[in-house]
Image (cartoon, rainbow, N blue to C red):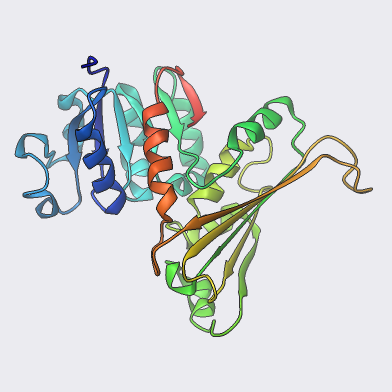
Length: 278
C-alpha cells in the first residue's frame, strides 16, 4: 500500500461532494481531513462522526493540505483567503470569481499555496491558458446547451426559460461575467474558461446559453478559440470542439463531469503558489 500523501477537506455534501467522499475513502494516496455541510444532519450515518466539521471556521484544526469547495460560491467569498493562508484551495464554484474584488483577493492570497480551478466540462483548457500566457489568444466563446429542466436560473433568464416549449431558445449571448451572476450553478465551465483565458477575462470571453428541449440525455459544450492571425479577414488560427456529456434527465451536472472533477482534485497539488487550472 502506498503512503497517504495528502489530507483533503470537502466543503459541501451534495451529489458531487458525496461522490468525492466515496472516492477518497476507496483510495490510499489521499485521506479525508474533514467534511462540512451547511446542514450537518445530511452527514449523519454517511460520514464518520470524527470527520464531520460542524463549524467551518475551525478548518485549521483538521490540518488539511487541500480544501475542496463543492457547496456554493459564497464559500469563497467568506473563507477563500483564509483557506489559502493554510492550504491549497480548489474552487468548485468558480463563478464566484466573476466578482472582480473576490478574484483579486484570491489571487493576492495565493502566495504560499495554490488556488486551483477545475476544468470540469471545459475541454482544451491547458492549451487555451498557454495561448493566454503568450498573448496570442484573440477570442474565446463557450456555448452550453441543455434541456430546460437542467437550468437553475434567476431573473429574466428564469422567466424566459419557462417559455421554452418545442424548439431551442438562446437564453443569453454576451460576456461571461454577467451570466455568472444569474446562472452560478450552470456556468462554472464558462468561469473556468474566463480564468484560463486570463488575457481576456470575464469581460471578453463570450458565453452563450441555449435551452434545448430535445436534449433529454445530453449536455453539450462547444468551445471556440481564435488565435494568431487576422480575424477580420478570417485568416486567424481557429479551433472548435464539441463535447457531448451524458446527463441524467433534469440533472444540472453531466455524468462525465464527476470523474473529471475527481481527476482535477487528484491533480491539485505540487504546483506552488498562484492560480492553476487542474
